[in-house]
Image 1 (cartoon, rainbow, N blue to C red):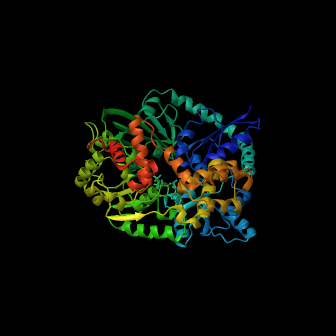
Image 2 (cartoon, rainbow, N blue to C red):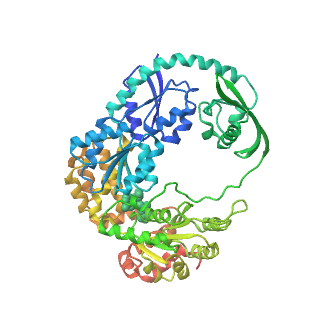
Image 3 (tube, rainbow, N blue to C red):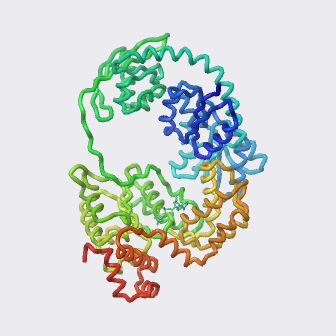
Amino acid sequence: MSIRVLAIAPYPGLKDLLSEIAGDDDSIELHVETADLQEAVPLVEQAERQGYDIIVSRGGTATLIRKLVTLPVVDIPVSGYDILRLLTLVKNANSKVAIIGFPNICHGAAAVSSLLDIDIPAYAVDHESQVMDALRRAFRSGVKIVLGDVVTVRTAQEMGYHGMLITSGRESVLEALDLVRRVYEVYRRGREQMHFLEQILDADARGTLVLDETRTIRYANEAVCQFLGTMSGQLQGSGLILSSPPLAALVKQAEEGMHSELEQYVHIQDRQFRVKMTRHPVDGKSGWLLQLEALEQWRIEQLNPVRIPSRVVSFDQLIGSSDALQKAVNRAKKFAASDRSIWVCGEKGTGKSLFAQALHSASRRGDQSFYIVSCDEMTDEQTDLLLSGTAHAPGLFDGGFGGTLYLKNADRLTRYAQTQWLYALRRSGGVRLITSSLVPLSKLQQRTEYNSELLLLLGELQLNVPSLRERPEDLEEIVRVMIADYNSESGKQIVGIRDQVLERLAQYGWPGNIIELEHTVREMLILTKGHYTEYGEAAEVLERLQEPDGNRTKIESYAQIDLSGTFEEIEARILWHVLQEEGLNQSKACKRLGMNRTTLWRKTNKMFKNET
Ligand SMILES: Nc1ncnc2c1ncn2[C@@H]1O[C@H](COP(=O)(O)OP(=O)(O)OP(=O)(O)O)[C@@H](O)[C@H]1O
């Protein structure tokens, strides 16, 4: 009989590696999911009921899972080889690098870096909660890039810095699977006894929740699963604090008050409950029996939909030490402290959105919401809905809006939408505005189709984000981060791109800036078989970069044009695009399009149909 193993890979590349290696092993029946930390919770909660024998995971995710389930959890280790591969990738980095992780990672890293004769400080932590503190210390001492496991990388990113993941290679996975076989035998015997207890509790039909002394749910009947909005059986083995914070708060209150019985009222999901809690001593330990009774239904109206990214972005996440980028960053940092509206301008893919998020994070509103409105995706009808709301949902600014509003590509607002925004913003108060466009604000101000009052309101301060062409010295640094990201996604262990390839990348003009660079590098990395991207592997991709820049820009731009609607609407979009590419210079656009000014104006005016 084979051992049923549920593997939770904290990053995608590990999933493929695990499947590949376990595929050759008849003693193990493996199912792999990709999930990191909290994402793993719903996947493992049901693992025991689904018949799994053992869970395999890595680093912080493995530690978290171990707290939630009664199944044994086996760690995939980080070996010296794993560390060696990443150190090779960063050994020529211009920025200061450090390693942050549990002692096993740090000791390994110290040994490997001394072998390679490179000086990389290591900060050891004994617990996940110390990661942030260690990161703070590292960043204060000038570190720009940290290497570590998923918790380190994620925390660094949340703090606005770069983290590179130390991925586990083949030899580490083999070691973990070996451990699975040994642990399984010990575990099998203990499980039989547990099964007996579960069956007795399952026979009870009341709305019942049983907790052990660590407030882990040992049993939850159907009614409780329904109250908490989970599937039957999903709660078992999970911590109460994660499954139901309100109930966990009640139990805490009862424990702190030294009560052995307590009755309370609580809101869970959309309903109100009376909860009776009784403490029961079992084998000298204290467990809780919770009985829930639903009282009444109530609903909270959901707020309306704009995208709110969860990531906190800091200026340090903008990679590049070039003067051009640093100048923009320094200017932006000063702007962040003020409350005035900012107009961010730059070519597509230069990082305007990233700048906007960093501005928000560094401002006094950093802990409030960051709303993105993509102006080019908005129809006039959607604009009305967003700003005025519906019978069931409030308008964007109704009921107080305290965060930052990012109007992306505001130069694409129709004249009608401009008027609506002006009206809404004047009433809004309290909101910090950041706006972006491909065309400089000064050029838009010369055009009659733009509402000058709106431009004044939105453009109190102006920021230019440099193109990649203006900062070629940053290319290598950006590529290095892209490789580390790709490794953690793909499971590959690439440590660099050959100089010859980098030289060719540096010669290209990058009209699509970092987004284009991302696509190009990613394609080359997909084609890479070994530890380095060889010239031969990248040749075909590089060949395409040899097209004259002008052509490439045009092809890419047209590819992005929305082809829905009537021919006239599509035509208007194309003409408008060319106009923007020519910096709204009508003469140049007319020359390129082979039409006179009157025709161009008439046709593009369809974009502003609501005004004419
Ligand atoms: N300085 C930078 N360092 C690293 N990555 C960057 C940098 N600037 C941008 N990027 C990355 O490049 C991509 C494009 O960035 P972003 O969306 O902010 O550009 P944009 O100028 O707003 O693009 P668009 O004009 O197409 O909306 C993103 O994946 C972003 O993470």
